[in-house]
Image (cartoon, rainbow, N blue to C red; front, side, top):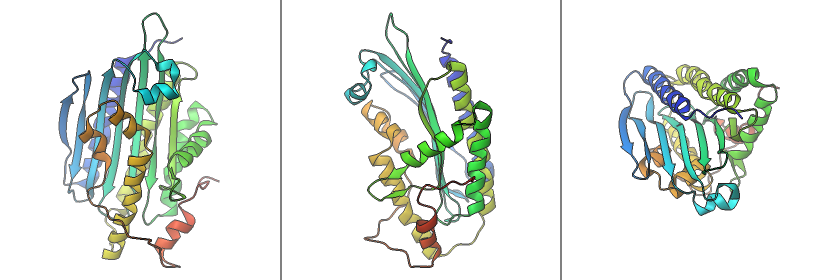
Length: 303
């Protein structure tokens, strides 16, 4: 078994946070991320960075966290009995970018590492993460570029990874109560511990590093497009799906709240302005209808 290097993971995650924040600030050209350093009494802490009211970014959060605990919550050990009686360390970078312009998709990314330890026994560990894109007025070429970047990042680590993680993303970010995907997907993986620590760490880094390569061109290409009040209203309506998923299904949100995580940092991903309309139905033949008809079900973008 290869040696677990927690310090190397922590160092990478903090560097990744820096890189992404610098790129987003450069694209916005106006606002900067404000940093909130925090400590957790049970062990650990983090750096929460939030940008608000930018020229391009209405709200963006890029959070690094490292938490420790003496025991896993009962909900976790019920699903993973091997974690009972173990202390744990969990670390990761999680981010969501909510642009002002409805023509720019919302994007989300997360990479993380978890290890549970017990004296006299081998540690239980895994990596997880991914990224997904939520357009309101999608451009097919942007969606293909997003997926192509994801494919190319994983290709050196195995041809099977992109289709496997792409399907996992489609399945994970599916809103069952709405019978639709949250967006056009991307990558998602969890419980990765096959092939040793070094291989798994390299895969997580490939995903983390490729996020900004996938998103920045889309942000740059669409951030100055003109939009109407009606398009802005539709964006705010669709943001509601983001809130619904994060509060009902998202594993990271639920784990953070169940383990006594920092609520402000956990919920930083929520958009600043959202609205729900009763029984909204897009008019046939409109761009809004096209989103529902062609983009909110799993699709093979690189076929």
